[in-house]
Picture 1 (cartoon, rainbow, N blue to C red):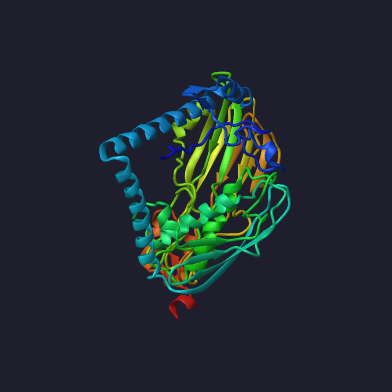
Picture 2 (tube, rainbow, N blue to C red):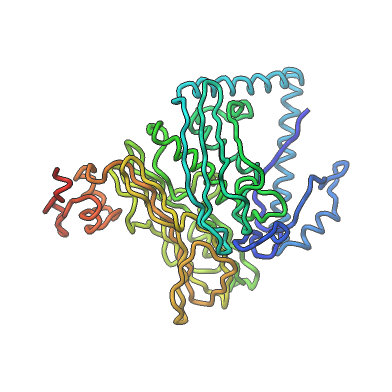
Length: 457
């Protein structure tokens, strides 16, 4: 009658690098264990030989098997709840109810679709690189809205590439569905029926529709461009629903070291929050995870230090500028990890390192995402968008910097009181108040000393 399904992260599934994702793989076989659709239980009992095989091919078997058994527990709860529902209402009633929910989801979505402006809307952008020095890669979308369809055509985007930024057709669909849901009715529950009006078109073997054995270990970076392209195409015609561009990348990192206190492998795998774009009537949000990563959490400083054995020197908002507008783009963050072990290996993928979050209606672009490696041993500072298995020594610092979101509207139209508040609260500097907003303020009491001629006009 039904399948109980569970989707969850496993911290480790093997592969050539700790954390099982990397930025320099060239084929999927380097990226961890490959499972076809196989059973892990037979007649209600676990297949121990398969479990042993998994444990033998991962770096942290206790943690990986813990993730596995948590998923099994979730499946059993789903199975039990569905059977209980069928026992209470009858199988036929439950199945009819499911069809009714799907049809209602479609009906409600079509009602909202009818309210959107009909026509053809296009956008293009560039993915920085593939982690191997190749790029940038042009990607594009043509959105066509009719009475009964929302068509997203990605034909013309770059072919699949050597490095692991490729995503699959499944991820393409997921990225399109996210923004489609936001544009139609984000308040109602999602089901398959709500996506019936959505049609996605693409050629095979593109950076959005890669096929085996293409590397895909950081697929999410390109999946986010799917959402952002549709967002960018539609934002000018539905400014009440969509903001300017945000920092866009998961800004994920992996830090592997031997914990100084326990002597065991400690493996940090995490996203990093960043700045969101401003909207027609609001400043952008500060320090939130990106659009495709809302189910993940930022690890608290105290937990990170205790669990992984490094020191967090700072965790602060990135107020380096960018995103100027009548409404200001949200701030990214800065997070410093100081190595306490004798050595560590660091991997990161920070997209939007070369192509900035876009502004809207005269708003200025945001700022880039980047990683800085600050040596404690006299080596020059290094700056990356992507790095793999970077060798670090005791005392070195990995500084994670995420970008500010794009601004909305002419910066010279931002009310003076808001510019003063921004300086007072540390979101912008006195220099930025003058260069970006045309307001020169007194350093002591923030009274207005001068307006730029363009602002006065």
